[in-house]
Length: 179
Ligand code: IMP
Image (cartoon, rainbow, N blue to C red; front, side, top):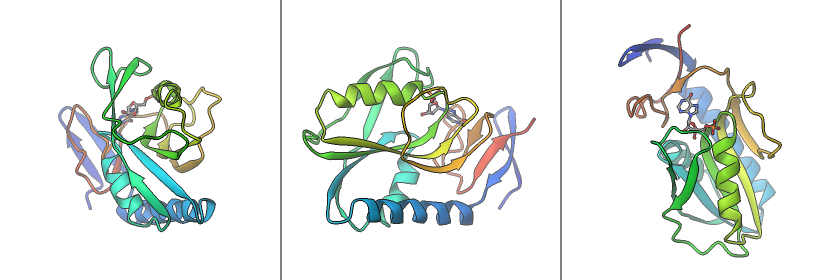
């Protein structure tokens, strides 16, 4: 495992290794299995970033479930925090169902809050949120995040699904921008 990597023009250093990620992903899945015992949920991973986390998480899930992926359309590009205006790809009927949104990272929380507002229009019975990473110093919302993998500093992060300009999603570990 590399301790330092370069993606385009930025240098990143190892923040969370594969083993630590695996442990935490399993722990979250176990919590969900416990909290939803004998219940059914619909997982909604948010593309693109959450695809790897979601794939690993759901393989530890034992409760009855469905998975439907969702993409957010923003005004300008993918990274425009808080500018989400539309949900793309909701094929599953979530009315009166228990939903768990799977996010890769929550930064200011703008995206998450807007996303939840849009999802609520489909009248699910309940929506809970799981995020692998939370930038605690930047998070300014009252919205509760039900399951949090790691609390991370407010620097740019790549790997395990997270990209920098489209690159580095494939890395098995999580890296943070070097100061
Ligand atoms: P928020 O709206 O400020 O919470 O930003 C959340 C979105 O910005 C995430 O869903 C990611 O797509 C992206 N994002 C925020 N921080 C990072 C990062 O450090 N690396 C990669 N993407 C990030």
